Length: 259
Ligand code: PGA
Image (tube, rainbow, N blue to C red):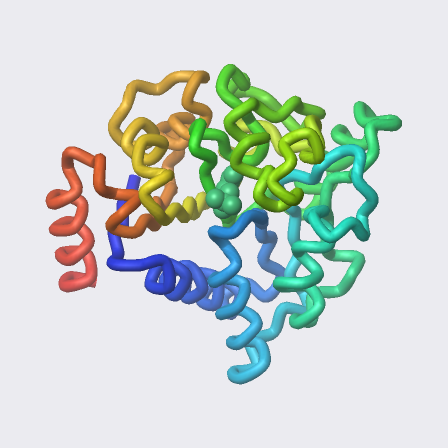
């Protein structure tokens, strides 16, 4: 596990964007796993900038989103389809046919989820999976208690997630869709590399448990401790409960110095 601690979220976005830029240049048909939420907005902004100002080409890139709410239309202002169009897809040259997102309806969810898994496999698997983390330690909408072997499926949002997401629904917890389709933890950890971004004090407990706590289905992100190539990009506030933060900083400085 690599833990990179930076003073603020902007610096995290810069590091993540550079990782993706390098990867797209090396492999133009890169398969990217994408996340929504407030955390990756800065990353998408930089990728758009790299496309517009430096000509970084996304025309062969394939994307798979982690999750989508069930029960709101695709064009709802808070759907993840809308989020991705607004922050990323409308501003880069990823062909529509290469943009995969979970469906927003419950009908035929079993066959849909199987097809989603099959599509990921057909594309050669996810090269880089971008992740945020919930206050309850979720990744995607894999809430506490999710199996580490879980695959793409329908899931019910935890109370903590409903409360956190209410802000996007006029502070009305009852307006937040209760269910979603999410990649499973097994789907996520099949990615060749995982980049988890976290910033802010409200993530410090989840980050401490994820990086330094025991592996447990009750903290879904702890599954990443077993991943061979995971990078935690966290700001000082999110890192503030880590016992070994001075060590992680020293390790990263040495890595930069000797690479
Ligand atoms: P946030 O959400 O980026 O809006 O904090 C992250 C998540 O719930 O996974």
